[in-house]
Image 1 (spheres, rainbow, N blue to C red):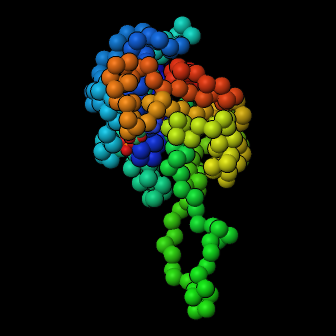
Image 2 (image 1 turned 120 degrees about the horizontal axis):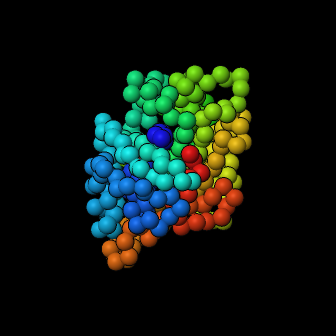
Image 3 (image 1 turned 45 degrees about the vertical axis):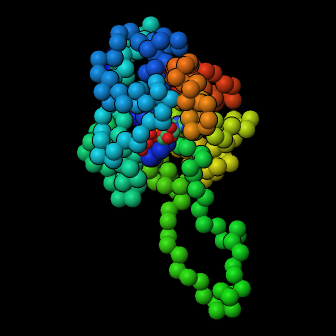
Length: 273
Ligand SMILES: Nc1nc2c(ncn2[C@@H]2O[C@H](COP(=O)(O)OP(=O)(O)OP(=O)(O)O)[C@@H](O)[C@H]2O)c(=O)[nH]1
Ligand SMILES: [Mg+2]
């Protein structure tokens, strides 16, 4: 059986790092999911694997690059060939800015019933909020404010993105989505870890977006998890050496929807499919 996972994420959200760490973990069979045969083409993630084995950070994927890796996994005694795409995250910004999907994306959206949206909380910007601003006395005196450039907030952009995707999928907006499973993955969890569950974090960080997904997906088709594919910050002193001596596959963790932590990041896939 073939299944297509659609991993969706803006630039620097951790897509390529996750795929490389997922493969590294599957390769040593130290996980709930196993490979039933070796991956035939590692080209899409080979550079990332080399970087991580040396304790180096993965490089950004060029915008125009679109690849996918087929992971032949064994799950519940079933053989599933998982098709996982990797691409430059700028493609997602392009979809949001232009409010259109090209034929390649339209096909990928149609084909997949398992969407995994990567959001990196430490990169989420808050939108302009008048109640947080102190207006300078000179501005009040002059009675005018400089024209500020309008930028769509991060949470609005994620809502727009899902709306565009639902439209492409021809989802009837009168009903909650019960056919496409949506997993929201809060990435680089090591950067924001403070005892909150992923759901609490999402509610606090993107409240409107949270309301949107709750209103548009039935509960059983919606998952919110926290992921740290690296487990730590490779820029910090000593961590590079840890990776070199212990192997990248021994790092990374996942926070499940109930807040419990597991070192087996393959749970992300087993819960998303
Ligand atoms: N601290 C921390 N950093 C991470 C983690 N995962 C990825 N990063 C870093 O985040 C940056 C972006 O990761 P990528 O995997 O390249 O992100 P991407 O979504 O593929 O980005 P594009 O290719 O630009 O679309 C890199 O510097 C990674 O080292 C993590 O779990 N923790
Ligand atoms: Mg990438």
